View 1 (cartoon, one colour):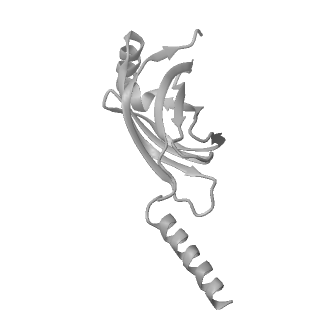
View 2 (cartoon, one colour; view 1 turned 60 degrees about the vertical axis):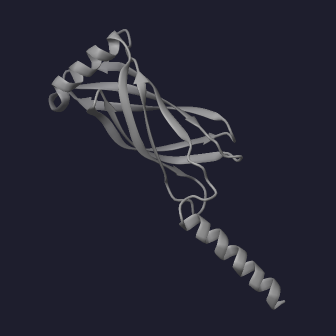
View 3 (cartoon, helix red, strand yellow; view 1 turned 135 degrees about the vertical axis):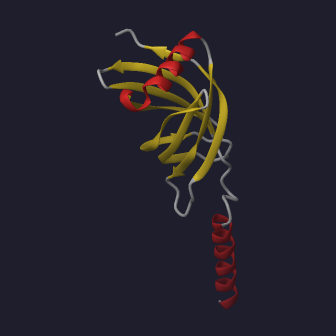
Length: 157
């Protein structure tokens, strides 16, 4: 009986140490910014819809409950924050999600105008950093960082 209990304790300790030392069991998903859409313009603010694609390299589904992000467009801070979410990335599959962001024109006016003009003319460079928190017990947030290009679209108003 003692040997079974000792074996159980050993397995539990190895499993917990794996979780504590950096996501041994969970591979980091790849996240890319696939769209930036200017959806509303108000006197003092603009609303953008940011579209993302997430690819799960793991052999099990990855339930997501929170995403923290920072986006740079053309080397200028564009948006950042944290959002609660409730979606599942299928095992070895893809999922998409959209975040709505309100930006204050008075605080980011000149930079925002350059970004929007450049993005509507063609693809612009982006850098995306953040973390994804899964809905799995004892799982630490998974950091991500990626760069690429994206086109800014404007909805017909």
